[in-house]
Image (tube, rainbow over all chains, first blue to last red; front, side, top):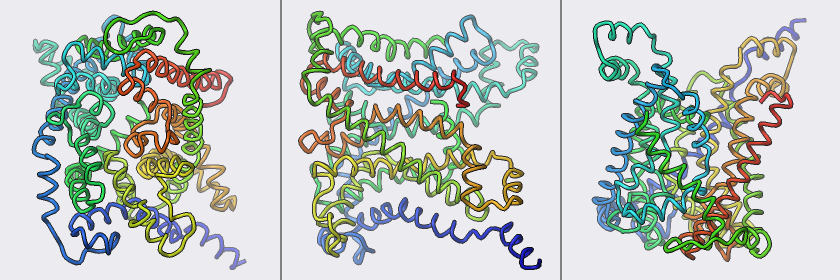
Length: 283
Length: 278
């Protein structure tokens, strides 16, 4: 009887050690390659030849300055920055307005717009990429950062509108009505009441869109072919193919590219993960 | 509302519709497009061996992504769900590969898979068979190798989705299962899996769609090579449109891909109509 009770109890407080062991192995699988990357970024060429996976013996920081210059990071960072900032501002402003009117103003045809956004978010890129490229080229928007921004805005719009709308639906009507009674126009309601009260939604959408644009590869490859317009990502791709064997250099460039992402991700990880997973479930 | 709709219509809707027209022309991207009826589709389905090959690769890709990452993510999420101490740290760290740019993930693993250096080099020098060749440069290993790399950055995301779903399962169900003496496997099968079913089915749907559209890792790592061994449909679109200047033909391939995606969505809608709870 007591043995039975003992078994019962041990079952209730289940032993979690195997969980930790397996999860730690998975953690090594996920993070180990990044640790190797960081090690290699400070090794000399000769050392990588001898010791491609282990801890660095002599630290050589010059890989970073070389990678910054050879990889033309001073130009590409600015290009990527323009794309990210431009897209995020347009998405938050225009998408926020659209979400507000869909959530609160009941405009005619709102259901149709929601349906259209849902369908357009599931249209594969490869259906419209080819005509879009030649259309953009004929009006001079290829090799133009400001030609790429509207494409990013369009592609991220459905997700941004759905997420922002769901945040705004949770906002009690009384707040807006109070402002309207005080004589505020819709613009003022939007700018003074809705945005301040739903800023976590705006921040989440901004982060998700910024990450998507910073990392984007396909469209940036197609629409920006002039090296002076390369983004960090497309320039890296070119750079890696001309320095395939110089792992110290390419690793240093990689670390410079992912450092800002990791810093922002680690400091705002909960918002990031929530936004990305909701995006995955809805988009 | 209007400005963003206008942008979306001119970027997505108008080119999509014109793609349907161009798929029936011999358009080269510039100049006039001549209407050729269904010639492009006849060429695609009957005369172009690379189409059949690419389609097969998409199906293989689908099979790999419906099994491996979903299995790993399910295991990891169900191991992580009962944990309290350190759970957030695990969740965050396992999610990190997902936020990296694909070019970095690709080049990192290309070096790790290098047969002279890297992990493969290490295994090779220890005499493990099958590691002496470049996985990415050999015809029959290239596709699984790319899928492995893509999956390395993907499964953590799936795991977080499954984990969120598992945390919504009422704990009383687990307590009831424990009182009935269920072991870990029975608990997983009878409580966890049914509990996360909507998320699981939705991700199976999305995986099926994305498998037909996959492009970036393949393009970055091999551009479809060696000798076309890793070509998928999107790679064909890219090559035909921007390297061979056969924009009409590329539009036909793009339309065919969209058609496959449409079929997948229809199958799911039909299953749902038939009363499947998905």
